[in-house]
Amino acid sequence: MKLDGYTRLAAVVANPIKHSISPFIHNSAFEATATNGAYVAWEIEVADLAETVANIRRYQMFGINLSMPYKEQVIPYLDELSDESRLIGAVNTVVNENGNLIGYNTDGKGFFKSLPSFTISGKKMTLLGAGGAAKSILAQAILDGVSQISVFVRSVSMKKTRPYLNKLQEQTGFKVDLYALEDVSELQARIAESDLLVNATSVGMDGQSSPVPESIVLPENLLVADIIYQPFETPFLKWARMQGNPAVNGLGMLLYQAAEAFQLWTSKEMPTEEIWQSLAEKYQ
Image (tube, rainbow, N blue to C red; front, side):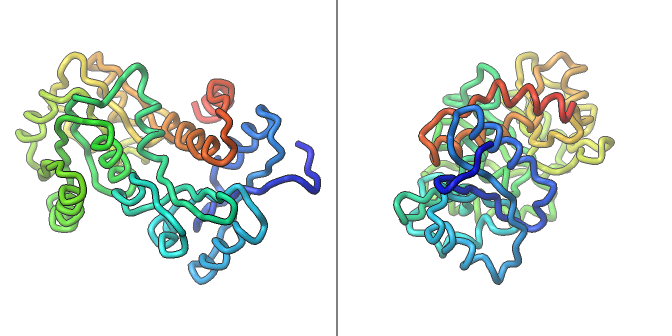
């Protein structure tokens, strides 16, 4: 990579962030597309967020990505928001258009792009969890014309989740069904008529636990997805594959949300297949 007076900067901003693989993905893409750019990771305190956003303009950067805990806190410092980031209430990509800072959320788009030969339009989805990743998947599914969504959260989180789903319904006219994860017969009934089952919780990162009981029977053609990519195969995905179902981990979501951001910044397509190879070797 050649750095000179014309090199433009992009960065991922979060705390913690030093472990991020986003610099690897984006710098590979800059190089492969011969784009004069460099991508770094900035671990900042919340008190420095406003100043960090101001620096996007100051240094004529492409923009930034945001991760926890700044995806929501960044919103007051932006000039505009895209449809999906307004629905989700969180931004993961800021684009600098001649000093005009626009917030996008590419997580949901990245997730659906990572699913092999699957379109959510007109389909039914069961979603486990209601955190940040779940919200981006929910909002994108609604924008893409999903026909029905069942969300399952632990009963202690029901109260916290309902207001967001109500707000989503006010904004889109789409009613999401909410259930307690402990209600196994309801879970079985919803999954039985779904086209897509998604684990958007962190359960399984330990390589041992699963968000659903193993007694659940999956319908034949149901696609199963997990947003986790470390471990590469969670117990949840292993269980789905043992039933003969197609199963996808979260590495594709990470790559394709980055590809969406890259395109917004550079108007170029990220060579995802090439980068996917090196990612898979790294994490498999």
